[in-house]
Length: 187
Image 1 (cartoon, rainbow, N blue to C red):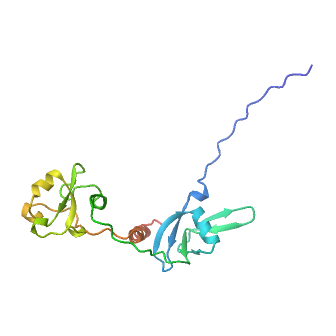
Image 2: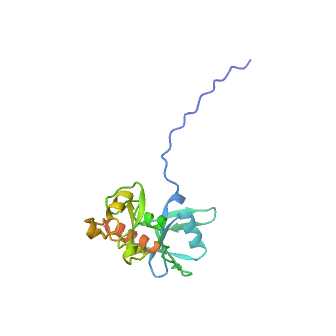
């Protein structure tokens, strides 16, 4: 009879987990070097391989190496599109509740409340005020009824921010990108 072999459990040591390369993000610039968006590495590889983008070396950052069975591709943190016109036509959205609340961060522009919001015309429509971006703000019911058919100055109320039309998404991304570069700890 054969001696019985005991089965020893295999204890796996926890490996140091590193984030998958394809989950990192790459900043995309237009042909005229305007930062347009942030995409994942997988999409950046597709743009680089098809020749629709080229690498940019703005910083000393190395980037990532993406390997396939036959090719190893260096993907930098910044790429520039080489084709097409990315500055697509963009229209200012219509003035409506959803867009005004989005612009004003769902906050009353007089007191800061986030409850029972309505639209308020700074210069009331009864006095010739128009339904345009510069004249419409989010206001809670209380502030709107307090202001009534008056201007904020007449009602003794102060706006938290001057209303303005929404900014093109690419411009908003560019402003955010350059602000982050100014405050970068690497500088």
